Image (tube, rainbow, N blue to C red):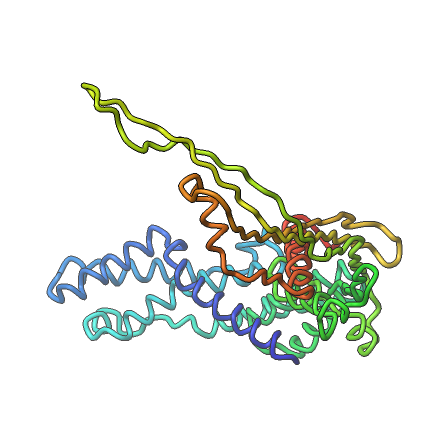
Length: 383
């Protein structure tokens, strides 16, 4: 029994326990509410004579209603579910029993309250048995759709009565049969292998397997690399093929261009009254050296059924990135220059172009993240 299933079953039991506790008051009848109201009054005021007088008959009536519950009371419900409902109804009576037994005031008025604990355990045991038998019947079909139903029944059986018979091993068996096995094949990185782009392994294949296995979006689906599938002798139900049909990183191109600048500036004013401004046109030339690197990628993904070839996804996910850096010098009058010219003149970055593997990783990850988002939002791996 692996740790994942054990942890999952613990959470289910815990949630089921919390849920029943939180919703027990929703099953109160009018008689139940009367009993709890009278008990509250007496716990607040032990000398409430009216409440002390009314409580015994009210409790007897409420308790008798619960004692008479049987499977025919809920014969319109599914097997297993009816016994769970009976157990929850009996938990109302158990709450009365607990409150009376723990209160000296209430115990004097009702010295022998009914304890439905044994009937609750019996109801849960019968629920587990009915869920268990349904699970076995589904499992005997020996196919994935019914294995998924069997798994659900065994989960219910274990929730109703933990460790009932060999339910844990059957859970693992049903889960294995119910699980859709998806094999992610190695990625084709265009005209070169993945090591050419600076990766020490085909990390994208492993990343997809890890990301999709950690997603809560897919129940009864498990993803494997081709190596894992071969090692475990797993026959794939679905295949994921990843192919970069375009992955290009250009050399760094270098060119130069000039920008002529001119500007009218005030150099003085006339002696007239009023004085008038005197302008002079100044000139400069900006010499820009530019380096550009262009890159692009396109990831093609096909997800299909191994047996029939039916496509679950067939699409491309492109990305592009352009690195550009410029610096400049000038001649002429600096007063003619614009702020943008000064930014280029003062650029001391040194033309540090990114290396090939950095750009490749950026492109590959951007394409992959688009694909992953598409899969999570719109791809169903089931039948």
